[in-house]
Length: 361
Ligand SMILES: [Zn+2]
Image (cartoon, rainbow, N blue to C red; front, top):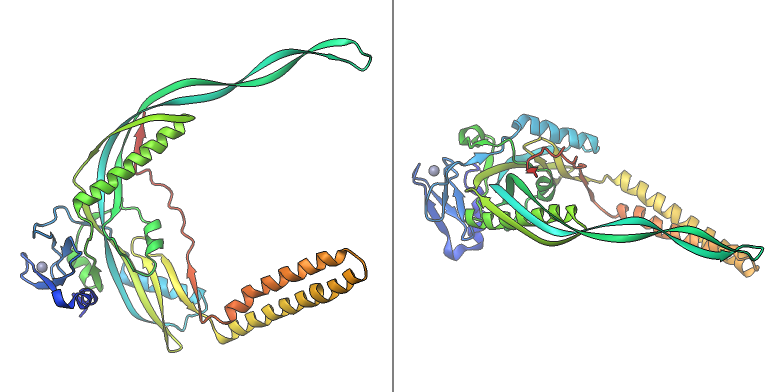
C-alpha cells in the first residue's frame, strides 16, 4: 500500500511534466522526479541511473527490526510522560549515500617555530648605590623549515541528496558511520514499510565532493604538523563510489487527538528526536513559577531597590539589577506556558571514532 507513495508529492509539484521510468528487471512503471539522478524501483528494488544503467554494487546499512524500533519509540514516549500516545504510522526512509573509497599521498612544506631561552647580562645599582651585574633570561623565537609526507586511505561518505526535509535528519547524519554496510536486500526490508529515496547527486558529483573534502582534511592534518603551512600538495586517487541506502525511521503518534512526530536511526535503533506534547498541568506550573519569579523581581528590585536608592544607599543599584535579571529569567518559564509542545532530542553520543581513515607517515 505504501509502494511508490513517496513519489506522489513530487509528481504533484510537477504535475505538467510527470516523469515515469520503466523498470528493466520487473517491468513496473513508476514515477520519478526531474531531480532524480539515481532511482530505485519501488517494486523490485533495482537501482538505475538516468540512462537506465544498473547501479553496480548497491549496498545498504542494515536496520534494526521494526518491533525493536517500535519498542524504542514507546520507551521514548514513556520517558517523556506521553506513554498514552498511540503510534499511528511507522516507516523507514532509506536515505541514499555514496561511499567513496580513496587513497591519498600528501607532501607538505612549512615553517616550525619554537622558543629558546637565552641570557643577557644587565647592570644595575643596588640599594646602597653599588653597581652590580646579573644574568636575566629572555626568550627568542626561532624558525626552521619543516617538510614531510603522509599517506591516508579510507572512505568518504557523501549524502546523495540536495534537499532533505526528513524530520530528525540532521541528528541522523551526525551519528552516521557507513562502515558496516552489506549488499542491498530488498526482500528483507520491503515488508517493513520501507521507502527508498532517490539520489539527486550522481557518482561523478559525489567524487568531486569527496575530493574536495579529502584535500581539505589533508591540508588540516599538514597544518597541524607545522606552525605555518606554506605548501600542501595531495595526490588523491578515488575509486568508483558504492551506492548505499541508510535507514531513518519516522513515526507519527496520536496524543489527545493531535499528531506528533518522532524519528529514529535504523542502524542503532535509537530515537533521535521527537515532539512531546505539553500537558495543561505542566504549562500552568510553568506559568505559576514564571509569574512568581517575575513578581519577586519587581518587588525586590524595582520597588525595594528603588526605595533604598532614594534613601541614599548605593546597594539599591544591585537590587535593581537583580530584579531585572529575575524578570528576564521568568520569561523562560512563562514562554513554555504558551507552547503546546516541546522538542526532545537524544544526546548524540559521539560514536567512538571507529578508525575509519588510516593515516600513516
Ligand atoms: Zn523493478
